Amino acid sequence: MLLTVILLSGVVLASTSLAGLLILYQLRQATDTKDSMRAIFAADACLEWAFYNETRATPQAYPHVINLSDGAKVTITYDSSDSLPIKVVGQYGRVARAFQANSPVGGESKFDVMFV
Figure: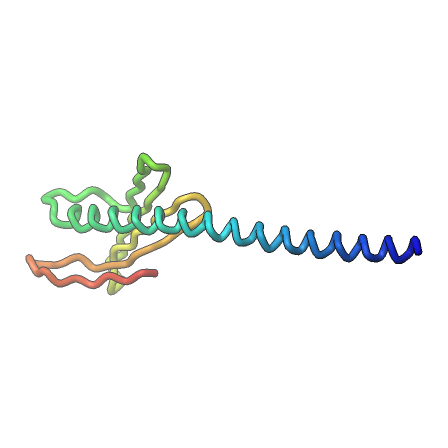
């Protein structure tokens, strides 16, 4: 009888621990989704800044790091040997999202952007 009670208690403890772990993973995923949106919006905004920087008479040097007021951090790099030379990485919390793009040359309105 005592062995049965201990065995059943162990099964209940194991199942509630597993359920708690699964709920923890779901909560973490929900938080990461919100952070992911912030990271991608930060990367998008700074990609626009990089396009603007390319059209300036005296562009600022790369790599360029921007810390936004909401806590997001964005790193912009330029690699002229790449077909998509501008790379923008937005980070918020534990999440990072990136875009790569080429800048319009000679007044063209067409450019390529890729989500990395």
